Image (cartoon, rainbow, N blue to C red; front, side, top):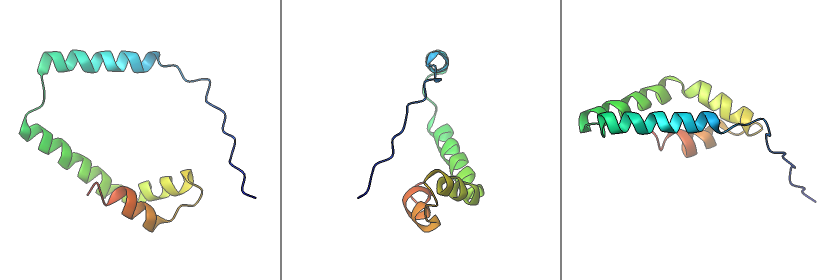
Length: 83
């Protein structure tokens, strides 16, 4: 019989930092508005470079997080949709 893992919530998490971060994002958006098309493309290209440049590290991290998950599964399901 397969038993599900019992996971206890992390009781040390505090949302106050998230609230401050969200407020800072709101303030920046109000001051600057939405990014231009060119800025959005530049940001997407930066994400693409980051994922491509760190593919091996990402594969290792996901494998460790999911208990030896297949690199091919992660590549197909997580990385290829980004690139």
